[in-house]
Image (cartoon, rainbow, N blue to C red):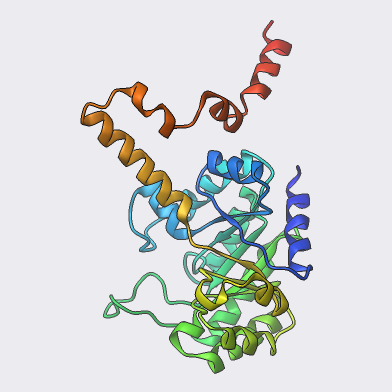
Amino acid sequence: MELTQRRLNYRSILEGDVCVHPASVFDPISARIAEDLGFEIGMFAGSIASFTVLGDPDLIILTLTEFAQQIHRICRAGNLSLMVDADHGYGNALNVRRTVEELETAGVSCLTIEDTVLPIAYGHPKGGELISLDEGVGKMKAALSARQDPNLVVAGRTSALAFSGIPEAIRRAKAYEQAGVDALFMAGASTREEIEAVNAEVNIPLLLGGAGGELSDKNFLGANGVRVALQGHLPFSAAVKGVYDTLKALREGVAPADLRDAIASPDLMAQVTRKPKYDSAINEFLT
């Protein structure tokens, strides 16, 4: 499926009236599994990128190039519409433009640019702060100006709910909407009151990160402008535990044959590696 169609598929969700949960993916295999299971969207987070590519915590030490390369691998593997967390755009507004250029080329359907001071500033190791509203608006405008395919979704992301409360979140949401973003990613939302308040003030779709608790009701979310709500990133954590448990068992002397029920079957491996496609190509081109 061409990239424009994937982006149109993502936009159709934004234009709908229901909320969907994306699949948290981190590599080609996980993206294919999500697609095979019928997920409409894949989500590749900055934190998961740091874990996957570097094996390091989410401290904004991953480079744009490393991020884009992994995105390219994920997008090449199938037809899943992929949204990504582009953090702060890897610098100022000029860096944001470069980020959009690279990630659009890599194949994303949606990217978010946030208004948090990143990486952690000196003197703030345990907290965070927002960039100025003017700088935030400038970053959103820069992101929009850099895209070549108008179907690529550019979402403004704000942590104002967590850092400053509802009034500041609304102020920033309205400013980013005025700048032209296609959607708003509300980080740190935890109550229905927050969602209702923001939704009442804007006319573009909302995206949520880590929605849980009283924000677990998809019907409520869909009725209040939320079109995509993350559920955390359990697949990567599950994969880490699976590898750890398997290696630990082998190290402790468990026979490989005794682990067969805990690992992917040959049929599942053939499915996720698209072996039948390659078998067909071998028959057609190498015999």
